[in-house]
Length: 504
Ligand SMILES: NC(=O)C1=CN([C@@H]2O[C@H](COP(=O)(O)OP(=O)(O)OC[C@H]3O[C@@H](n4cnc5c(N)ncnc54)[C@H](O)[C@@H]3O)[C@@H](O)[C@H]2O)[C@@H](O)CC1
Ligand SMILES: [K+]
Image (cartoon, rainbow, N blue to C red):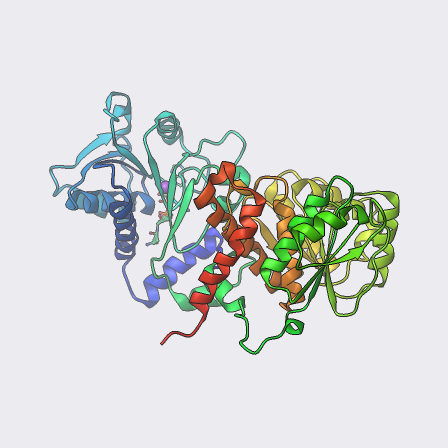
């Protein structure tokens, strides 16, 4: 799914209005209907809604939602700024429509302090993507007061005060919501840690904006959605043999960090590589042969790896638990200098590469590197925030012709063309040691199965997150373990296969 800038969203609205054709207020009606319907389906424990409306189209949607919820039998109150009352035409029209409903009381923002907030859901329809400057004082006051309330909160399109595609100023006042019902596209700010904390759970509602315009309009940012994954995923062939599905070699483990190699090897196998090898120090022999009997062990040195031998037609995933000893570093660089095929580099492999800028240049083209924010900083330098970090990743991915998987709550796959794909599967149960090792195993396995690098990265991060979501449902975010995630990879493939196979 494409992520549009505010300007492109406005154009998409305008083109839809012109080409469909549909009036602006009827398009607002469509957006309001989809919001009211979602609320009707999902708010089972509440019968009371208090809707805060602004002066523009977002406010107009608020008025329409108020009317629709009232007609569905809910108790609805509306708050506006009565003192200035400079509503836009679209807002005025829906505001006037409300006057036919004597059961809906319209309050002024100044009455908030006297209002009874008991058991009501707060709906924020103050500002949408039309916010062009910092908020006026009157709206800041309202938002500050509402942010102190414990009531459930829903924002329409975007939490009021938040910009859609860039960072706010540090002291900006922003509505902090539990749910955001957003129209047609994810907004970039929902996907970054500094701004995403305001948007809560995001629900994207399809309001059927002009598809031709969406298809034609270029963008640099995307969300990995199910449609994209189904285009990438190739179900296993009936007449397959193990040779078709490649040879994955995990290079990792050192004395005391053998678990990382175990997790990466297990997840490579669960992802389907035809043959899976693990190159690890000899001290890991028993543990690896016991925990991963299907994998083939390649001997390293006693307690660390000092050389990586080139094997024909193999895809390497290097890093989990590898350690950063001088001899390991030497072995890694000797290997990388002569190796041409795309591979996966993670963890300690990246830590060793970050020791010298010239090392970056010997990463084979189209390889996938998977740094978390700290590793990224060591590799490419400090940035002020995650928006700048992504911009830097785009420049570096282009320069080095590699794919950077920037691990975060919403991991970003950054391509050598300067595009970013945000992954929205996964949860904070993955914020545990070992999760990254699993991703390395999955990516190595997909590359070995001849998925092109970008497709392997997109499918890999999605699969990793999806398996984590399945594990979360069984064990909770707190208790789920990386091993539980590996054990759910199979269920993710089952659900993918169900969708991908031809049905009669
Ligand atoms: N027909 C359409 O064009 C559609 C509009 N949609 C909705 O419309 C929203 C965008 O509507 P608008 O462009 O009217 O913008 P908003 O409703 O976000 O707000 C803009 C209004 O607020 C005023 N304003 C802007 N910044 C302000 C500030 N800092 N302090 C006080 N007032 C300020 C502007 O003068 C304008 O009246 C979307 O977020 C979405 O909710 C969607 O329903 C899709 C269809
Ligand atoms: K809003």
